Image (cartoon, rainbow, N blue to C red; front, side):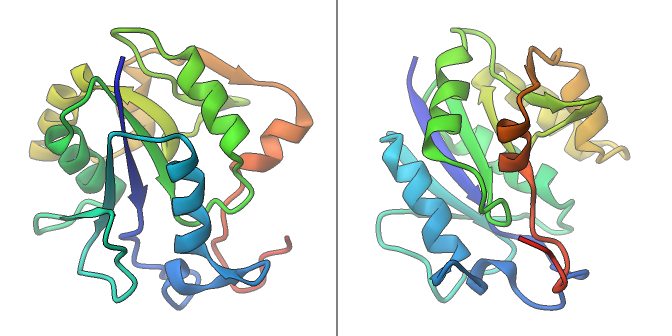
Length: 183
């Protein structure tokens, strides 16, 4: 198995009121923090998914811009799945600063040759910190061409094969969504 990685940084940040990627968390911009996690996994390709070219785009990452009209993370994931030249894609949202390289490594280790890993907390899938097989590309393209852009419904078609039970792991999947977020 081979791996590419994508940082999803194309959200509109409506609830936050400003670009989450440039927000600082523990003294560091979120984009830099999340890229360090992805780089620690040594992916063969590193992508940044965004709606427009970010000012902070690093030299070692390939920019993948959403095709208009953007359908949120579905657009970015579809673009990355079709651009990658590997068997699997490691996905991480820019607004999940509690995630660790160890947790992502665990997800990578749970992936199989033809199947990715989509964590589940309770009954809710976590498709923005997950591993996708290249085989998911066709389903993502079909969803993007349709009228249902729900990642929750789409990823359930793949089967949810990784349940998060430990409280310390659950906290890793929290995201920053509002200025009042309590870290």
